[in-house]
Image 1 (cartoon, rainbow, N blue to C red):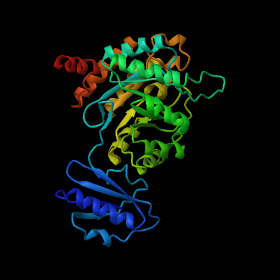
Image 2: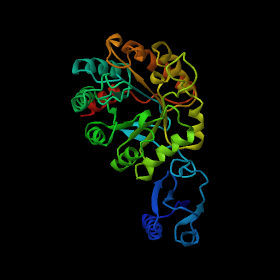
Image 3: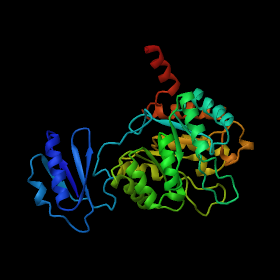
Image 4: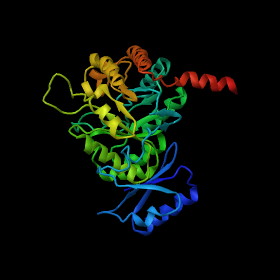
Length: 352
């Protein structure tokens, strides 16, 4: 159930409704909007008598939400959610481009890549310190040392950072170092991890599972929102199909579907979605064309020597071309590219 407050409703009236909901043994989730506040109700196992809140001051209407996902739906919030990642807005009108290596390998490697991402006009730096790998013998990441290197490079080049947490132990460490927490495809339905991420109140980038339906994907996001964290970004990163021509099948049809039924921003990962370097650029263009709010790609200055996902990593020079192509397509769609971090820092420095 969803309670829509009147546009003139004050904070006291919102709090009174929240208290009434909690008296019923339910959970209230105030969701501020551009014009009014909506209050989502979770925890009910059946229908709720709406009469107890319908007549309260400031209440405009009570809506019964038909979807199993309540808080991520457009019924709960008609306008797009905009998530701030270290000062970079993800969602809304502007397009963002995220780049960086699959895995943090060394300080020298990350500095070289981060400099290329910044100079090309990238907005956020990615890099894995904890790597869930198919083989137990593959490179598993540098752990906390990798997080330290990532955060250090982010500060040096003025880029917010996002990195993956693979369990609750690593989640606590990632939250200390990163501006956003990534929950990878293999953990999309790790519900205890999702709940813990929801309690941290830090931006979360949630990747779609390899065989997840749209409903399963949105319900995983619902776990995070149900714990009070509304700073969630979704990411389509390819699903497992019968095709063996690419590593995965990048399901771009899910982007407009999510845009229609959810207010959360959606990014596209053509690196994991294809697994082949030559396909990253064209699928990045396609992702923006179908309405994605941004692209996240793997960049490495020596991809043939990469310890993880080298075949799908592009060079910094190709990343620069990708940013230009993304901007060109975004312009056609009437959507600007987010201001480059380097330009923003330059303006800020000049104002001091």
